[in-house]
Image 1 (cartoon, rainbow, N blue to C red):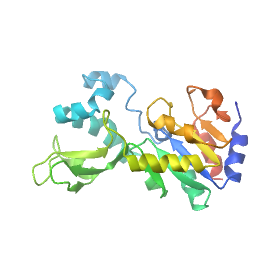
Image 2: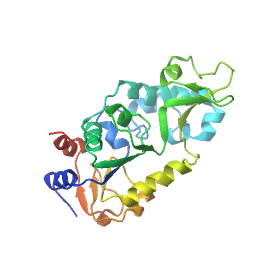
Image 3: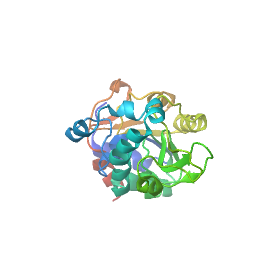
Image 4: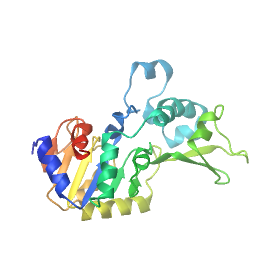
Length: 242
């Protein structure tokens, strides 16, 4: 049902068993663009849609073009970004013992940088990378300073610890995410279209009656959600910080 911001804020503040499920819209308020959107700059610079470039097949067949896009559209905006009101409010709720887990589709590390600890990163993180040959770890800075395709000291290609299209999610992360959602009293959904599978199906494991959607756009089957607020997430979470 349609709700107002104050009603949702009251529910959040009064709960001590919250799980947050978030997507790209959470980080757009930090200046990180949704890389799947097609803008003028993208059309001028890239010959393939983002979903093709960010696929396992494309990475294996054309790592140079993959990294050209990935560094430009993903890594550089992530390094410049800072946690916004949503990230900071969630960190506050966790410190107060109210927020039990964050389940995120984002790879930007902003929840960690805001101070949250219990985070399930469904699609991995760009801040960790590994050599595909020997497994040696590398930082995001190592990737950015590499000329073209980053290579390990052993000569192997370095791959981001992110889940590309065509790759499966980590089973342990899935299990922990579903367990957290199923035990929550309040489930907050924000910044996601709820169309990317299998992650979108995780909310079906929620058993409570306080499922909250905070989103600019509508999502499929919105009538099944208990409380709906169409606005930027920051408008709601900035009130949590007060």
